[in-house]
Length: 372
Image (cartoon, rainbow, N blue to C red; front, side):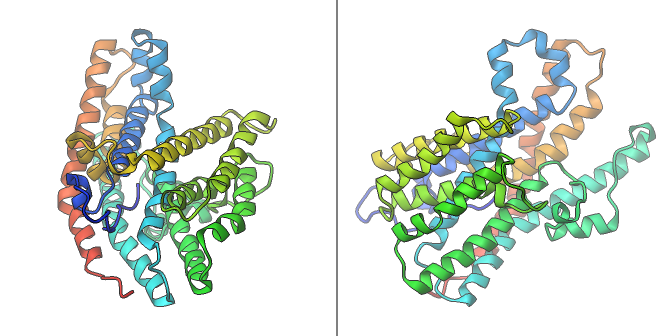
């Protein structure tokens, strides 16, 4: 989902990998690809008739793992926190630079997002024309306009595509965190100060996520702790945060996992546990240098590159196609074949959108140079 790392100085004199030479950290880039693939495999399986047709032919552990692919979204949120911190580190000194940062984000995210909206609406119209009994939902003009500005959650409008709610969370994070960094940069405070000052908000966020504290509809506060986990990990990696502070944040996650408040419906526990696990893996990568070396493989770089387009296109192409072609009477073999085809077509569509829409929009955003 979201942002791609901006070019940052890699240690002078150190040999650089292919991923590092273009400004990306292989570990982060590879994790983005893993997150996208896990969400694709999950949605094409669990959100379509496929799962019901093949569940008797798949080992229970494999079925369990595929059905937990939604946790790739939580991985995306942690990655976003890390990447935006990498982008803004010691750069956001003026309100003008904040505006420049947000415009760069929109130039990066909007064109593929708007493409997904157009394809979804267009495909629904075509399907209804060819197969009237399908009844594919066609959003109103007002709903489309609300989506263009990421306002559908606040307005209580159903997402045109199921994954769009996550982009609403991303945009709110960019706005809020950008202002936070602008404030701290103007105050010339240290990363350790940021860590302590933001800890109460982190605890409040987890409490909202567990429904222990009410939150406004559409507000990203219940997901703030996931984004800020990435921020904390970035600060720790850049030695701007002490190990004690990192342990306090990880201990906060662990406390909720162990206490397991009775309001939980199972989702809060597994999500919090996943964020804790991601945090531990990140910390090891930061301590061992793995952030610069792990996942530095061509296939990981490829899926990391197309991950945003893949995240969008699988919902427009893969899920919609499988809902149309998989029938209750299909054999498991046929359902597996169609599932594979749906995933591959999603990847192919993502590749096209990446080359035609996303990469040019990235290049356009890079033309807005930082002034500081």
